[in-house]
Length: 203
Image (cartoon, rainbow, N blue to C red; front, side):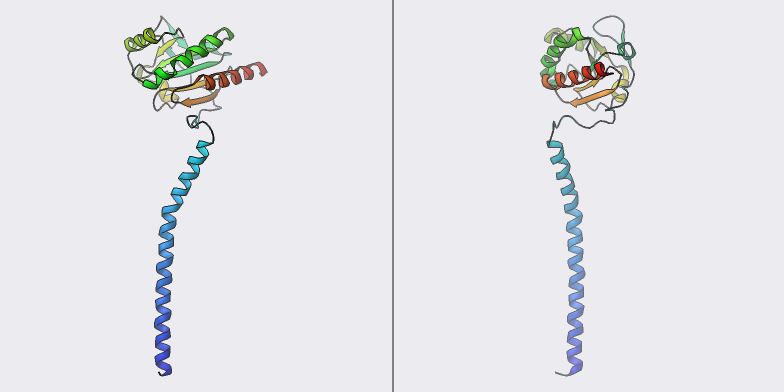
């Protein structure tokens, strides 16, 4: 084989290697584009599973609670958040058609019974429901903490509520201290109410 032939063969081989190299890089780039988002999702999921998965982050945590003045459905008058300054307030967004709201009712009742004498207020905010249905729900399951309606869901929007139930704990200084989604349990309520009471004692 002549020198010219050898050079041609080497050139063709080199060109083939370059093409294969480019194709390989493209394949790896495609794999990276697919895998990277999956890895990021897995990391986020893993970090969320380290704690209570219902305790989703909220931009309102540590911020002043949005003010509201809402009409009661269980009595006359309104409940104005400003009138509750200096008290721990548990704001529970709920609805009569919400099955998890039934599941959490006993925990709310127990927390209300335990802490009402210490100035803690549990407040049920009816979400996209009628007063009649809300009162029927109360008559069926019991309880006597104040219930209000939220015309136009304005307060739910202010609190970033996506669905019910969602529960917030407000410190005596009016700061939102905690939030949870889904049926709240007694342990979460007592832990966060106690923390809010300590915050009030220290201020």
